[in-house]
Image (cartoon, rainbow, N blue to C red; front, side, top):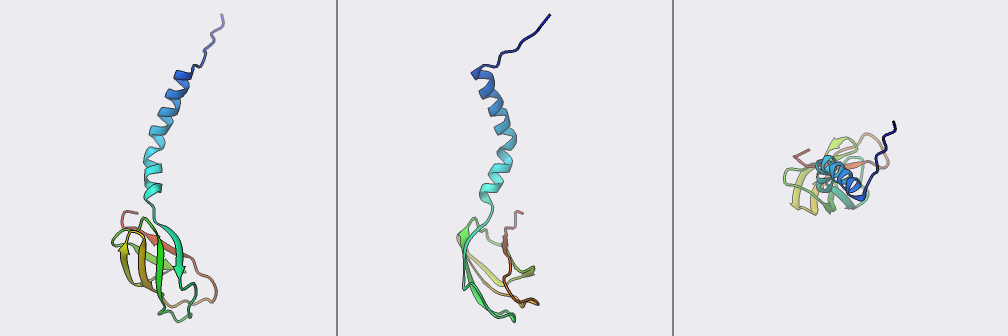
Length: 105
């Protein structure tokens, strides 16, 4: 005896729907994550103290800015697309990674 199951368009669409339900919370969170589009100025002294403007999207009040692993100073979230901050001192010359972390994670 042989049993064959045929997949129909209806069963295929239902499967895609179930996968979407499982992924929806992850996708919704990623859509709200902070995203940096530009930083001005793009350089400053290792001693820190440079006033910077971070442009992007998804910024929330209370967001933290980390530059080269060190917390930025005087962080002000002006809008969901604009942050002002002051660079911290750095022990190393060269480029530094800039990260924005919202209070919700």
